[in-house]
Length: 280
Image (spheres, rainbow, N blue to C red):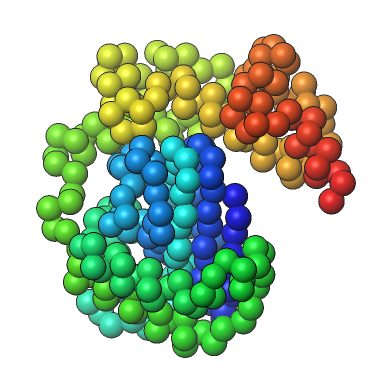
């Protein structure tokens, strides 16, 4: 993937794109709130258990992980600001943002989504070639706050009030969220389906159904993806430990099985990931 950033006092404007299938946990800085919309998105991509569309508005906080699944090409643009700056907004905008952080995935009118993109994209440059990946430029903090206010107003006026998940679907989503929280907290442990069912307060059949409904995968496949992502994070961090030790620690009993799964997910061997880090 590629990342464009423009730094400002109190936050950052960003654009991130990928052409690959991926499943990852997205976590802004701990004291930030972020709003993002797709510039382009493939069918089958999801955020917070719901299908992403060009009209999606993603609302992220730094206090919890957010599940993002890409089925292929995905391009996002957004703004992330320190939480304390929100108090500078109008009260109705503050109230809306507070509610939006609990919903996390909203749907806005097509015109509003397009207007948000038109607001954010020019601030990062007219084309990809004018703002290089990783480039960081200073902007005045007041400009950032103005941009946040404009984005919030566009989202408020264009929000689809019928987009909330029906109550019964909400209960199924909570099953998935409880299971996800349990899996992330016990990543290094020997976890069976019965353990996940107990943590999610659901039967085996209900658990399977809920995961397939919201994540298009099984609980065990989701756990495997979590562990592979954690292994990649540790390798990229330069942790001084053998690859086989990291794999075993994360529940992979066979080094060859871990290598096959890792290569299938990231299109490279664990040793190649480690080598690229050491060459930096």
